[in-house]
Image (cartoon, rainbow, N blue to C red; front, side):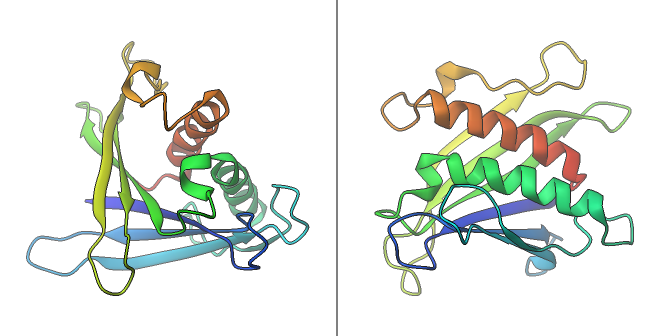
Length: 176
């Protein structure tokens, strides 16, 4: 199984999220999870948009190119807007994206999002805070976030839109 772990941090200590890190993991039975790829995007200007990237081969086509940079920029810009992930008061949060169910043609049918939080990094393990499944109800390849699955006290309209863009971006990354 493959999964994408997303972190957003305030590396410049200006009380605004500025660094998005994507970790691409491969999980195999009886083996530790293997980090296969890593990408980082940084917002230096504090405008909520990516200025610099350490991309690599994001889409796995064997080449690091403009498409990889565009995929990372789109995904990272959305992650910077997701308040749950980027609040400086809660810096130790992450989201794992993975396909939990495929159809017979190996197209994603359900994507699972696991929201983790770690109160004491380095001392405690991550704690699962929320888990939800996003589905393709019509079988048309469009994953739709159900607004009723997200707690309204933690996710506002901007968060929901950012999360939907991240889900769409995850599918384009091809890490299923």
